Amino acid sequence: MTQRRAPRPDTRSLLLLAAIVALVVASFATLDLQWRVFASAESLAAMARFGAEFFPPELAAPFVAKVVRAAGETLAMSLLGTALAALAGLALALLRRGRWLGRWLMNGLRAIPELVWATLLLLAAGLGPMTGTLALALHTAGVLGRLFGEAIENAPPGPAEALRAQGIDGWRVAAYATLPQVLPQLVSYTLYRWENNIRAAAVLGVVGAGGLGQMLAFHLGLFQMGRTATVLLAMIVLVLVVDAASVLARRMLMR
Image (tube, rainbow, N blue to C red):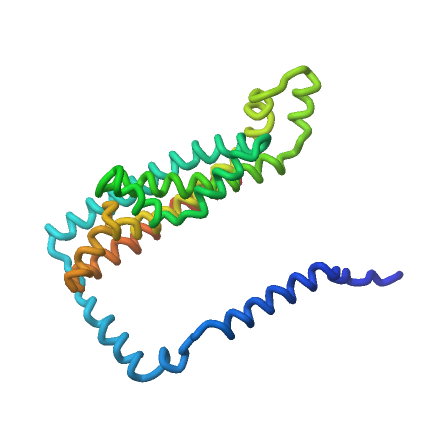
């Protein structure tokens, strides 16, 4: 029997790998990363003293009730923002297939971080969860639009060609042939972005967009470390719950 030779990487792959390694080395060379100062005994002691100030967390019933309400607000912001983004992203993905406008819109939406969107929207919507919800929806629409567009483009063309052969074209081809094939993948992308938006919604509260982030900024600014610790614990619990629910939903879709 003849032995099969292992496939060799092509020249383009090797050049790409070399370029990536060169960029990583250049990044270390150009950045002033003071690892010695960071790992010094004084720095570690200062971090330990600061971390000790978070204990014990504030567990008084009235304050915990406020934290629970803020967690619900953060959850609602992330859920509604992701739902709006999924609808807008699907529209952009379908628009992207035949026009350059959809691609430019998606690039622009996701190029601007959620925090910048929230800062801009504060002028129009003011303080509160509406600003955070819209900021999440705008940024995530660009991200999901890109992912949805690639999923639609990579869908097997057979069902669509069969409908076109029967004289059916336009939106009906996408509705009856393409979208049913990629729907589980679109839902999986949406659930994954919902996980990310939980974290983003918590951060957006720092600029006054409501939820746990707003409480975090307020109590941290007043150096109320015990209350800050309670808010941080609520963020961790909320992220863990949403991550678990998202993973479970994706597993059910893959069955």
